[in-house]
Amino acid sequence: MRITFLGIGLMGDPMVRRLLNSGYTVKVWNRTHSKAQALAAAGAVPVPQLDEAVREADIVISMLEAGPTVALVLEAALPALAPSALWIDMSSTRQSEAQQFHALLTAQGRRFIDAPVSGGVGGAQAGTLAIMAGGSAQDFAQAEPVLAAMGRPTLVGPAGSGQVSKLCNQLIVGATLNIVAEALLLAQAAGADPAAVRTAIRGGFAESKILEVHGQRMLERNFVAGGQVKTQIKDQRNILAAAAAAGVTLPVTELVTQRYETIEQVYPQADHSAALLALERLNPGQRVGTAPDKLA
Image 1: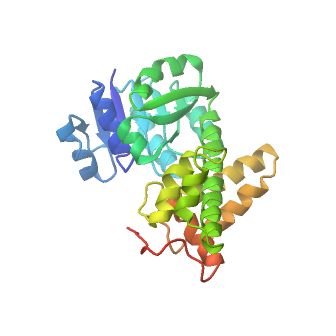
Image 2: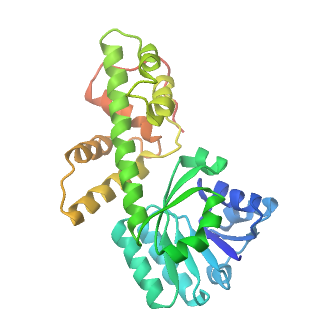
């Protein structure tokens, strides 16, 4: 199995390492070649030219910034792709973009799966990412062992469905981050100990991974990024675009998007738990805890 991985960022680096640890030989490419070269010591094969990187690959995996970047890289790589190569895009894009990538590749005799992920850098390092795949059952069967090296893959429907699933995930994440921030701020403002309140409600119906991980981040005021505010805002806007295409209104998601937009220019690279900072700006004089803010 000849695998090429495109995009060696916060997520791409540990994902490649999981593939290498599972015994796969992986060529790696990044626009900044030094990031690809950093994986050579782990056993990857860094290639400076995109066409050389994808040539003869059975599977090409892309983990890039956004849909427009994926489109540029895909179009540049297409002439060098092997016949019937399978392109797995694990970036977060719009559903319509994933469908366009699928149409472009299938028209040229190649194949496509959109397989965005959830779980952040920690999940990428541990190989426990939730992987939501959209494509044919036949293509997924080929991709599944490779994807399983990085996490838990699930086929959720035809091409584009992976992105819909990821948007549903991010919809819940974005809203829950804001609700947890509201709960902690209310506890503080009303005279309770927010850390004790969080401990008290854990294990009940309010329990969630967000309350566990990001609730603690908020109490510590640790906003050093795992998932960034700018990425969450991109996802929020993609959710609303998907909703408009599907003909549905999502009023809570619209409000969550507005809340993140209030800090878009101030804290773009902060962790998305900075929803607390957006809430505190709405409530001057109110603040959870006394610790200084930790920001990259």
